[in-house]
Image (cartoon, helix red, strand yellow):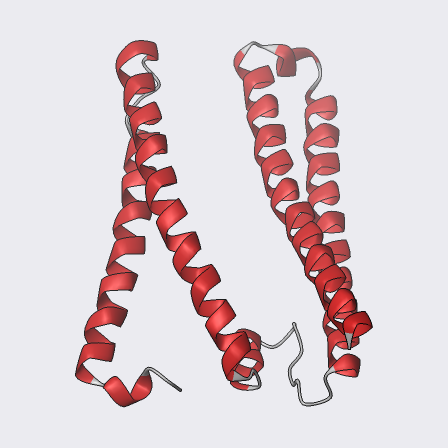
Length: 179
């Protein structure tokens, strides 16, 4: 039993790592596009347009590679979890994977998901406020523009709206809470 719990903990680390790979690829793709745009602004592309497209293509291919590797790692981790717990169902390639996986969880696993989700909600509220403040200061002092502040605000509005709508739904349908 202890060995299985240790394996499940290690699988959680593997999934965390694969998600870091995936979001890191998003970051590097965005910085690659930014760097290419910066080179264009400074006039570097006038002399070397081929280098620009090769660089941008390399960044895109790196992102695609990282996403594929991340999916393969996650699939292997899910398959191993299904071998350990045969009652688990679902494939990461299914659009309803999270719902199907949660439906196969026992009460303790669902409670762990609840606790993790609520902790994430609280941390993201604080993070959103800090980022909003940083964006506002950047807008006022460095002239970065209003776009970043608007994006953070929209993110916070979506987050609190989803939370509130779910709260209202569960208040109207209390029997749905434990499903």
